Length: 78
Image 1: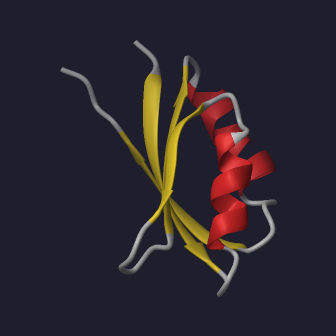
Image 2 (image 1 turned 30 degrees about the vertical axis):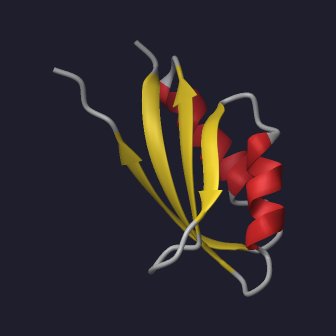
Image 3 (image 1 turned 135 degrees about the horizontal axis):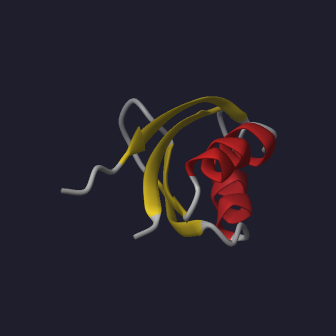
């Protein structure tokens, strides 16, 4: 079963749309949406490898123009 991460993203004003469109181009992205509340974007990522998932967040997501902060929540399976 793939590892699923729910990525909560804070964005600079006016950058949410660019962040969502960039995330949707990543092959690991299951879903990416703009939302209201304390976070501006929520993204669901999947990978078969936890290290790859961490690398993806560090090397790709954090470098998207307008991303100021992220919080990753990993899904646990029984």
